[in-house]
Image (cartoon, rainbow, N blue to C red):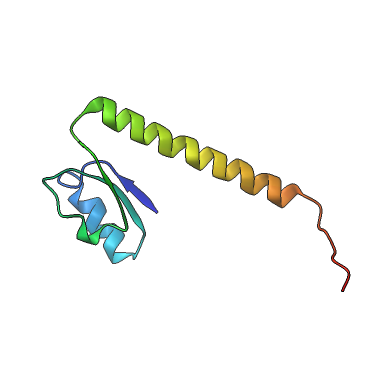
Length: 82
């Protein structure tokens, strides 16, 4: 998965992700076509505060997901009687 902030400036990243069939999460302003994006986030990709807020939330979600995955992997196996 790739996270793209500005599709107009990051055309190479978009093309590479499409070639590799990588899922794409992107901030999509009104000046871009979101058709090729798997998970478009409607937003103003030119505003610094918007970029900070959304990338910060995405980073927190990744950390939380990794933490949950680690705790599930560390949990003892439970056998269910049949």
